[in-house]
Image (tube, rainbow, N blue to C red; front, top):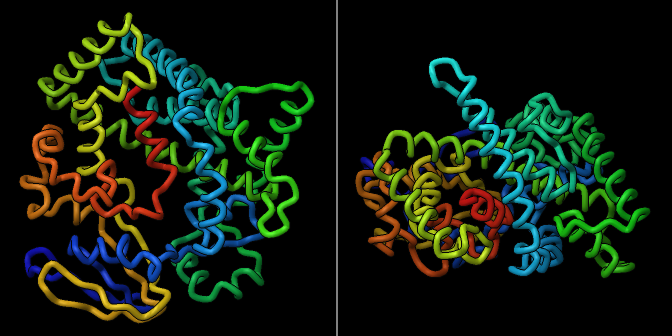
Length: 398
């Protein structure tokens, strides 16, 4: 597509044709300007399955009210209350890393495994209020069940088939995630909820926010927050932070190991901030870590979370491109936005294969426009902004 300077490409699939879009102007049209014409992601949802009804899979007409109810839960004040939990787990990571370094043969450590255990401990604490202790014990149930949840996910072919013919899979009660995973996360939710209500426990975590939301809502007949819906959002928090964060942290550490000059510059930035704040890192002070944030952003650019972003056209529309051409898209068309292709397009990012976090500091145009979130990609939707973004950017700089 890039070599031929084509803004679009149509590929044939077993069930339907798909439209690949790499032109940035066309992507902005789809994700922002004409978002109302492309609100759905094209995933199959089984509304009888708790883990399936999470924010990352819901249809727009259900996604929008759920997001509206959850948005106040991520106010700066409430996120600030979670920050001490993140710091506590980070201190454990430093301790375990030091111990593993002393025991390691040939000075080699399996970083992906360590980052996975670190992220699962943060998720367990921040979302579920559970001390997983995966850093000390790699065989904890929460970590094992977390891995199984990804292994048991519905085959992409059936996911696409279920979106095209949802009534068939819904009639057969096909689950997106395994029944074992559903049972585990529902049990964790119910046990945690019962314990907190019985003992009047508060931890200022995501579970507290959901329970408060359910109490404040009361009996909302138009859109009740059922237990399954709450479990689904806890699971959304889980999938937002587990594999994605572990992989991004691993890639970032890999790049820092390859570029000691960048590593030292980031270290000096952190040390200077600590020196100016009584050797402490706080939620507010960390906003000053501009270079470290650029490292996270450049890692996400070079190694994007997910290779493509799917969208489904719900009504006929015409979109514009950077080549002064237009394209009319019919309802039901699957649209795929290749993140990797966009992030490695030299027209947008010169020398895309190089790890250059400073590019995000010296050239503001790399953040695209103010309507588009530059933290992950220049094509993230303004209205479909995901809670994953909060989770990634609040977790990594720790």
